[in-house]
Length: 220
Length: 206
Image (cartoon, rainbow over all chains, first blue to last red; front, side):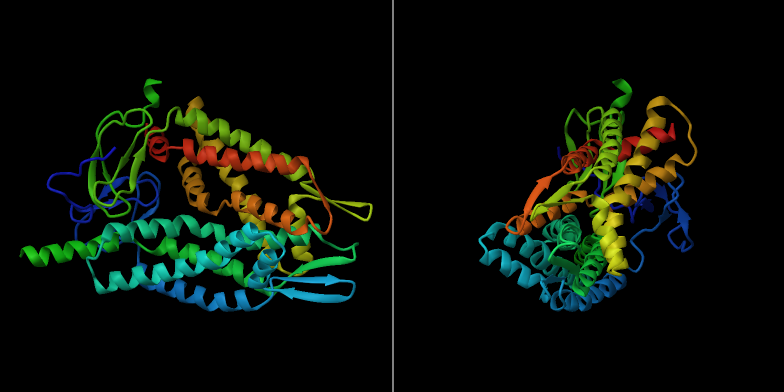
């Protein structure tokens, strides 16, 4: 069901209202110039008109994730010891192993979860940040949908961390083969957590704020 | 049933995606209200929201216990059977001094879902029974914050991928806990589908 917006269309920021991030309660702002901190009377979440320092924080987290993404892919995620000889596997070599041994589907799942998802998530967040900083009014609805997708899909990148954990648990001491977790797995976990925080700190309302500024400049 | 309807009167809401204000009328059964500008869901009507999410949360806690008590996979190789429980992987990671990784898996796979479900049962049971338990709002806020960090469904996919990887090396016997874990993933998904945060906040206001 499509709802109708208020007439004339107005945003919460212009109506002088906080939209509580925790419980969606609308709270009247003391005054437009008010800069102190207010808490939601219902759920006690700190209220903000927009997520504080959203662009700076998201950039910092995106860059941090990019840096950690390198060791996550270059260092081994698993170290397999079989009768004295050791074999180190990175994420990509694991994917290739699956593809070569006939488990094409499983290889594809890991490839999407550990390579396609994090990289596209970082690219999309960079694009959104740049578009907000430039203040473009290009397809705001599509950009909002893109943001929602990055927010939803990020968790699936944890797949490889769980695979390593289960492999380590199943193939352990007492056999000829043991599998140990490599440092790459740790870096990979860090990347997933950081990108999840990056998606959370980005404020999609900034996409629409730029639109309204443009509207004003054309009508005035 | 009358007091179970999501919104009895028109409510003013702002979209979290684009900040536009909307007047949202009482929603008919199984419908959802979308933002007229960016298409984000503002509210969705969840039939029997409190009863259903409470039931699924309680089921989830029981299943989580079962999933942790019994072995989830057993590996048979050269006549030796080795049982593995959910926590084994975490213990092995600690032994290999991968503390951070162990903590991450313990949190997202076991602890966060557990705390999330307990917080929901606490809040929903108090609403259902009309108890005025302390710190209900804080508990519910905690549950909402924890929601994205509960990753049991990703864990389950990870288990399946590992099974495919090891199937050629050894015989893998699925255990009770694997099925409990599968049911837990379904229960958590059902909680997500049936929970209506807006309704819970409203009821706590009364």
